[in-house]
Image (cartoon, rainbow, N blue to C red; front, side):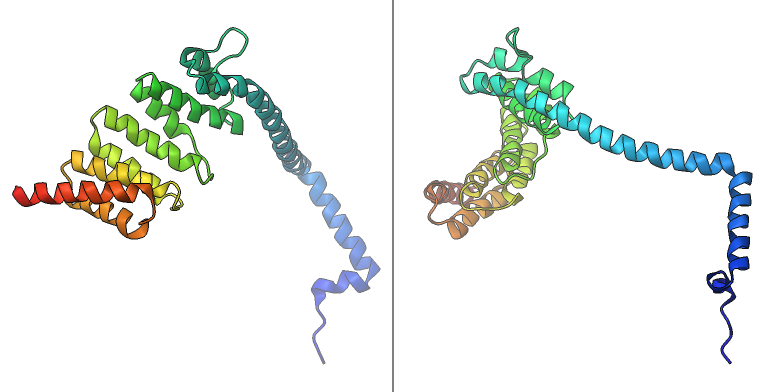
Length: 231
C-alpha cells in the first residue's frame, strides 16, 4: 500500500486545512511588522521602478528638445553657442550635465566632445567622448576615433593608437573601418611601432582593396618599408 503524503492532507481533510490556515494566521500575527515591512518594501520597489522609468522618459524628452538647437549651432560652427548656450538654449555642456542618465544627455556628451575637440580643448573633449556610449554602427566607432584624434593632437601616439584600434574593432565594415585603419597605421608610425603600422596598412590593402584608403595605404606602406630597410 502506498504511503499517504501527509503534506497534502489538507487538500482532502477540511480540519487539516483549517489547522493550516490557523497556523498561517498565528504566524502573521506574530510577525505582523516584518511581513508588512516586506510587502511594503516590494510595493515601494515596484512603484519606484516605474516611477523612475517615467521620470527618465520625461527627462529624455526635455533633453532631446534642448539638444536639437545646440547640434544645429555646432554644425554651423557656432562652437561657443553650441557648447554654452545662447541665452535661450542651455548648450551641449549643460544638457550633458543635467540629463546624463538619458539618451539625449548621452548624445550631448558626444556632440560636446566634438565641439571641444574643434576648440582645441583636447582633455575636456576626451572626457566627454569617453562618457558617451552607444550600440550604433556609426557613432560609437566615430567616438573612439575622435578620442584617438584628440590624443594625436596631444602627441600621445600610443593612446591614440589604442583608441583607433577600438574604432577598428567596433563592428568592422567596409564604410568606416578602412579610415580607422589608416589613422591607426599613421599613429603606429608616429609611435615608432613600424611593424604594427605595416600590419595595419596590409589589412587595408587585403581586406578593403576597393576602398579609397587602399590607395593611400599602398603608398604609405611602400615609403615605410623603404625607410625601415634603410635603417
